Image 1 (cartoon, rainbow, N blue to C red):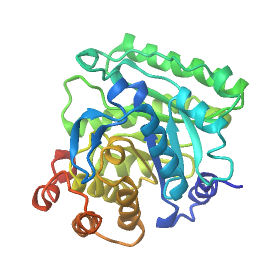
Image 2 (cartoon, rainbow, N blue to C red):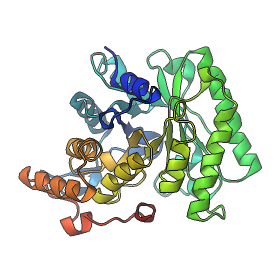
Image 3 (tube, rainbow, N blue to C red):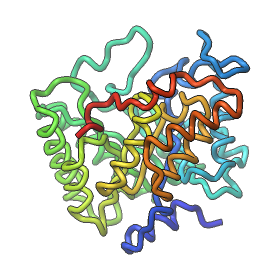
Length: 330
């Protein structure tokens, strides 16, 4: 079976893209960042959040359910979870492409009572390509630049070493570039310029066979997104990451604005996983992109469906209609 990702990437590269070709990834790789809390909090029969957390089995079942829905194109997982689900043939007759997080830089170390995001990020890779290439052929590699020669050099060297290894195993990847977790002395508009330049500098020295299939970056406003998306559209496909949960309006507004200014991919983790109804949320994400449903209408539809299903929303409709991420107000 030809995966939906392959078909959509071909259309985007040939510049015959239509909104239905927008790529969505469910990022269920949180266990490489947050540990025990990754599956999210348990909910009671009415959908109300409880104090305890779901287990790994619940997390895996959420991946299976989302994959069977055919609403997403990629399921991003940790090496251990990916190996388990792939060997159970969850993706054998599926349009969904399994992908593995290939590294875990220190700025995604989000363990409870930890404090790793208070300093310059450092590269680290626990996943081994020689093992992962036996069951998967797509992975995410992540870098974070922090305007420091030594730390940024370490990131670029780690990425170069990964690409050398990936070529050996004929392993495809997409590149994630986070905003720095620390203050590097730049205003929000300057940060977008800086990140864009770091990305182009990082991939300009790569030959076609080693380049990432697409990017996964933070949305740094309309100007930064449009600038990067129009720089080399035949070869550089832009995707956005979701970040924190925020409100449901934040989720729909983010995917709308990113798509409007040139993104062709969205890779959401917590926004999907921590929602009251992940399947419904992704259906409406697609409606925002494909059917011109605006973000306000989508939030109202989401709440209406939750009520029909007798699921208690986490927020009142009034609160859930608010945009809380300042970058989305630009």
